[in-house]
Every structure is written in structure tokens, then in C-alpha cells.
Length: 225
Image 1 (cartoon, rainbow, N blue to C red):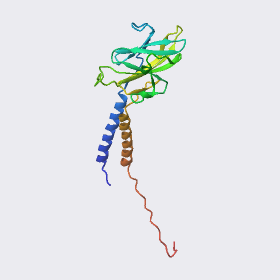
Image 2 (image 1 turned 90 degrees about the vertical axis):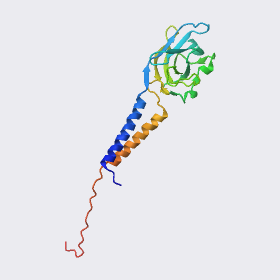
Image 3 (image 1 turned 30 degrees about the horizontal axis):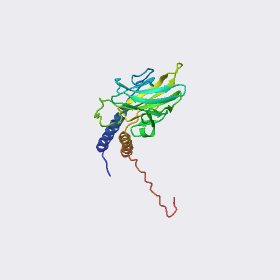
Image 4 (image 1 turned 180 degrees about the horizontal axis):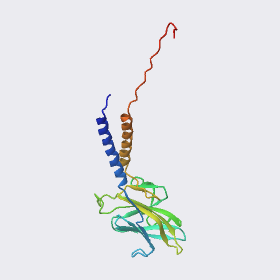
């Protein structure tokens, strides 16, 4: 089959556009360090509460939070309630975990253990899922989280929790705990993979054919040479 240089050029341009669009989709993630705060304070209506864990719902800083009790001596964390807004959900996680919209059910949710002390120790990680009313397509009827994050927490000299490190991936389907790496949607990975596969095809098609050297056999039946 004869393929012209012009056809190969058009094909290469198309594949390049696919690759660039897929890379742009992967790079659009808004992942930033910070966006968590732990406030040692009492909460009206919750006499047993002594800590408020706040997380930002947007990159601009609109926060929501969870009302908890933390017993430093026992290393026990008890989830009591959360803000009456778009809400959030805390998870027990560890570094390297991929906390995503599909994997969140694999982690212990403090929300489901309301008023139940959970042993976390004095050096631990929490993950969070949250959302904002400013998210595209937001609906109160849809409880799916649209942003995910994590925090590394330790106990200070006064027995209070402090944030050692933290991050949030806003309007992303997940984040790798302990990193600033968002977990893209499966469709984005598929698009990128198809683009790379197609690039390999273009390279093979556009590679010039090397001329074949044909040897001519010398026939000397009389053995004169």
C-alpha cells in the first residue's frame, strides 16, 4: 500500500492533537499543598467536642469541617458531626493510598462510625472527600464528592493535633495520599494510552523503506574462472 507523505503528515497532526488534548486533560488538575486546618476549640452543642478539622472546598478557600473529639492519651479520634453545608467525609488512609471517588468505599469512613472512638495513634493520616456548591453541575441530590485530599497529623507538646503536611485535589476524582498527584479519570488514561499507541504507528508508517540489495549469482559451469 502506498501512503503519501501528505497523508502521513495529516495523520501525524491528528495524533499530535489527540496526545496534546489528553495531556492537557491530565494537567488541568488543581492540586495544592495546605488547605487543611486543625483548631483546638469547643463547639456549641457538642460538649464532648474539643477539635475542629477544617478543609477547603475550593482553591479560593471556602472551608467546611468536621467536629471531633481527640483523646491524645488514648490516641482515639471520635467523629461527632460536620458543618451543615455541602459537607465532607473523613477517611483513615496511609501514604501511597489512592483515595478516589471509586475507591473511597475501601477505606474506613469516620462518618459511618459517628460517636465511635477509632484508634489512630499520635501520628496518622486522614483523607477527605468534599464538594462545593460552585462545582459545575452541583446538585444537592447527588452526594458524590468532587474534591479529595489528605493530611498528616501529629500530636504537639500540649496534646493537641497539628497538621504536619496536607494537600487537596480540587474538582478531581482522587489523589494519592502523601503526594501532590491527582488521580485522573479512567477516560483520560485511555485517551492518553490510545494517543501513545497511535504515535508508535505513525513512526512505523513514516519510517522510510530501505532499498533491498539484490545479489546476482555468477554462473560459471565450465569452471573457467
